[in-house]
Amino acid sequence: EAQVTQNPRYLITVTGKKLTVTCSQNMNHEYMSWYRQDPGLGLRQIYYSMNVEVTDKGDVPEGYKVSRKEKRNFPLILESPSPNQTSLYFCASRTGTGVSEQYFGPGTRLTVT
Amino acid sequence: AQSVTQLDSQVPVFEEAPVELRCNYSSSVSVYLFWYVQYPNQGLQLLLKYLSGSTLVKGINGFEAEFNKSQTSFHLRKPSVHISDTAEYFCAVSVGNDMRFGAGTRLTVKP
Image (cartoon, rainbow over all chains, first blue to last red; front, side):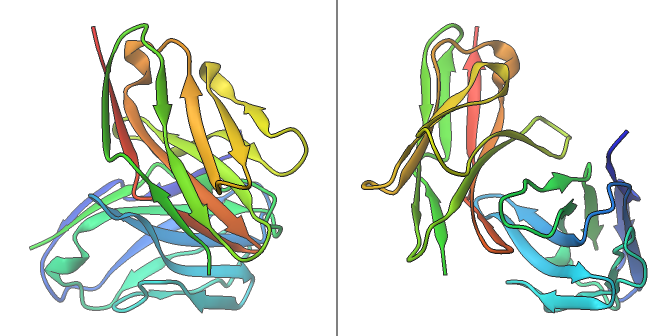
């Protein structure tokens, strides 16, 4: 089954404790991205990657890191989480063209206390 | 850069009534347009998309949308909604590799 998986689905952590949210897709897509969803703000892009070893900032990259060492994986790293990073996070992937839809993971709900 | 405005943050309707969720976009170049649906506690899934050709696009679950270039709109419609259509709906515009989402419209269908 074609899918994007994320882990964990739910995470509660404390300020400053480094964490990683994993994302994996099995569709051989070149393009992957991370979004955060906040009430009234829709989805805002954090980082994206157009292929292996190619990453770039989205609209809200502060406080986040990503890496793309393999085509299928695109982890999101919070080196020192803060309460304003409490949000719902989505990973997405698509083929490398603008006409294609994005496929979304199930989401990771992160709470930073 | 392109942007998307969803004109209604919440739309309550009764079951079997028609519904329209409004979406306007701005862009200086040609765009591709999408509607996604997010059911409670789930990720987003594609409802429909407009790439080119006929301006009336049909999607899943009986939804359709009309692309209006002169009004830069891409409104989503369904002639008769069901309780199961209760969800959040997102309009998105894509130019090249950049996809922008609206703030979302929460559709609540009441019995």
